[in-house]
Length: 127
Image 1 (tube, helix red, strand yellow):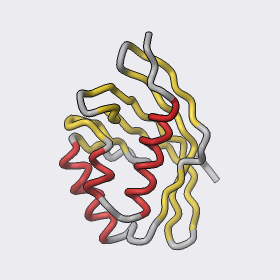
Image 2 (image 1 turned 45 degrees about the horizontal axis):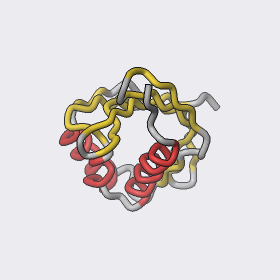
Image 3 (image 1 turned 30 degrees about the vertical axis):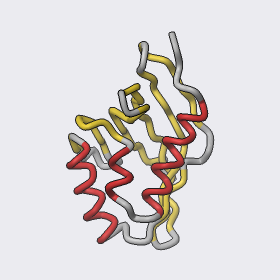
């Protein structure tokens, strides 16, 4: 079963962090499929790239303005089917200097436009 190249996983994750850190909701959402499922640390479930972009635009202009995201650099990739993998990564965000660690899981799928995330689940790490 063909796997996603590690460099493409790293590029997807780095692109998310770069978009978050620059407050660019459109670029952030572009990493997801049109019908992606996005579940935040508090259980909020957002469906679709447009809704992901809209939510992040509000967040980046409001309570998460100036926040930063890191992916921690360490991740695992588990093949699920041809053209689909599970990615689990340690990371988190910092808001007003307060670091919030998370473990995040993504389903990445091969699309005609390249690899995109079809799902996202953020679980905060207890402090």
